[in-house]
Length: 72
Image (cartoon, rainbow, N blue to C red; front, side):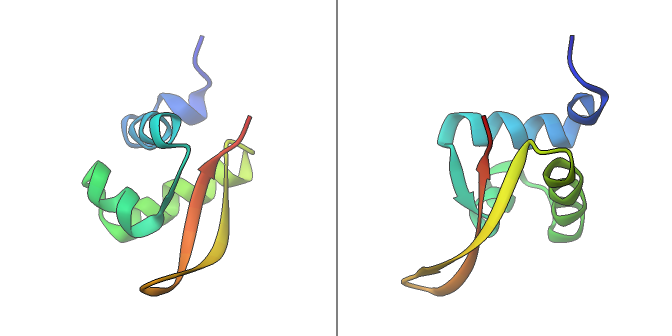
């Protein structure tokens, strides 16, 4: 049975994309899911608080980005 925190359609989509790719920048995740920045940030905060994802800053060719990864 799915947890209530994941059953929400946008959070389920985020978790599905992260399950496939394991980690992505927030920008790439927004593009892959079609979720706008504000909504994505809200859902990621909830998933992070529950321990499903983690966010960290990383240096990329485009500058400093936030990378989101799925947890075990």
